[in-house]
Length: 187
Image 1 (cartoon, helix red, strand yellow):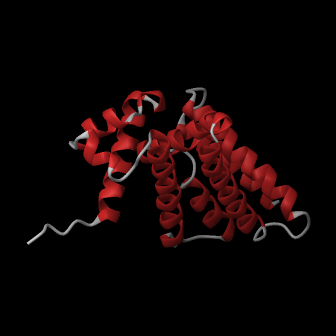
Image 2 (cartoon, rainbow, N blue to C red; image 1 turned 90 degrees about the vertical axis):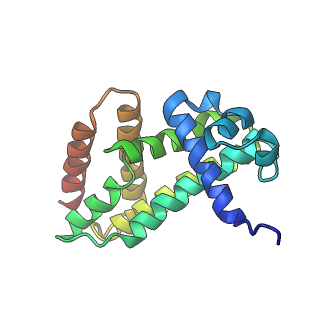
């Protein structure tokens, strides 16, 4: 009997290997060879799933978006609307090791997307999804100008994320700044 292989699960395993390489060594060190070594696969076996490094990176990034989106969908935070919004946005800021890795992956696509249209598509997907989340959340807090408020909230979240990734802010300070901004926004 031939072995039954769950190709979807295999691709997810490879995405997780990409995440580990990025978390440990940075995105510049992601290659078919390094991901194969990290996953315990041969480069040839990995190429059955992803022909190029860019395909592998794009899939790994899309998986981060899906993972964070799923985590947010499953979230049922207690508290006021303002507190619930804070809990949702905390899922998108690098306040712990898991979210730090996710943010590192997502923001690595800023520079990668500048020179590669396929990776730029993933970058746009990330920014569009984040803006739409901010817009959905802001509409619960403000009655006038939700689009502008959502753009500002998106900029605040991204700015705090970049500052944590760069080591300019601790996760605790970033969380406190996010809460302060949401308090201002809520009036």
